[in-house]
Amino acid sequence: MKTEPSHLFYQSRQPRPFLDYGEGIYLYDVSGKRYIDGSSGAMVSNIGHSNPTVLAKMKAQMERATFGYRLHFRTEPSEQLAAKVAGLMPAGLDRVFFVSGGSEAVETAIKLARQYAVTQGQGSRWKVISRMPSYHGATMGSLGVTGSPLFTGAFAPMFEEMPKIPAPTCYLDRDNLSEEERGIKYAEMLREKILAEGPDSVLAFLMEPVGGASTGALVAPDSYYARVAEICREYGILLIYDEVMTGAGRTGTFLAAEHWGVSPDIVAMSKGFGAGYAPLGAVVARNDMVEALLDAGGFQHGFTYAGNPLACAAGLAVLEEMEAHDIIGNAARMGDVLKARLSGLMERYPFIGDVRGKGLLLAFELVSDRETMAVLPKDWNANVELVELAYERGLIIYSRRTRGGKEGDHFLVCPPLIVTEAQIDEIMEILCDALDAFAARHDLPVLEGALS
Image (cartoon, rainbow, N blue to C red; front, side):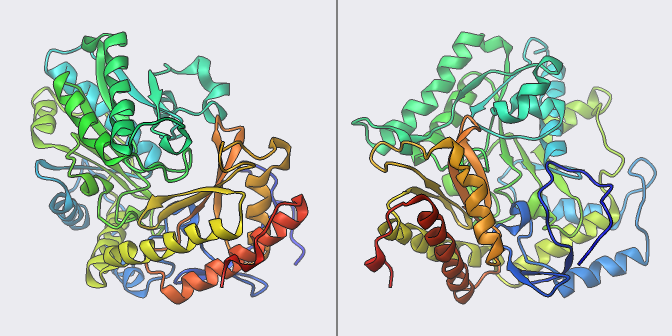
């Protein structure tokens, strides 16, 4: 199909076909070709595409009002969604601020933390410690806490670089520690950084409970989570969970925090929260924090579309659909199935070095040597090549480079949470075909008898 030159621009000149429509876990281009959305877009489409119940509820709201500015009106969808979200949070987190996306959510969480500290007479606290690598958004504030030179480098002179500690990449460690000891080791790096920076200057620690694209679904040892929370309490530091990718059921619980019984002080969510039906995110904080801000004159922050009634109607419909069909339970069950299938690939492909993740936030990493976890040659651009091989075959997966953003190739396999076991079979069949083609191009070993 011949088209006129585009006036749009995004990250690259990568050619892509026109999208025609979506249905469930599938997307169709205008030529009729079908693609399995094996990454839920960018880990967004949690309940699949074109859900008729959600669309009907959005249409009903569109017929009433599509916009009502939050300083002029309260709206039923925003109030109902806030109440629903508060009921799904750990005890004590019951005040909600709506935003339009993940970067806005992280920016909001940081500013809320800072303003709260000021109300408490702790104006010396302004540093937000985060991890390297990590990704927390594209605004200037969220770039300051992002641990990725790939995204921050050109803008470094324009924002305040915040302190970083190493992400708990235990799968790369070659030591004699147990998993529990490794978790404690990485958690204690937070204490060391707090002391190095000066406890009275540290405002918060920001972390993804399960890593996103920067670390490829990295899960820390269980011991890590409780120790980090203890250290934050010990020094009076706020604990912020970036659940932009993990929230709204992606890991098999509504918040990933639930896996470890952690109650953060602030939670940021987006992506699957609106599930692609409308730009939507949320920041949830403790009631006492919000009341302190309001007593001091209000939260000095906001976005035009915060609490948009159409977006909130979509978000409420998404959560109701999740509850009605046990979609989060399905994410847990199918996550176990998909992870087992991905782990099984290691028998066939010696160049798969690690499979990791939780629920349906899963990834595998390619290496040149599984024992040392040495990376594939950088100039192979495996992170691009394998994605394209899968795309040509009708499977969409998501890739990023793990080691400093410049090498180390991992691939996220994160289908919508409605995926069935039969559809996982489809995903694996195409993925194996793409891996076979990749191996053939680079003369990599494939153990033919390893998969049935």
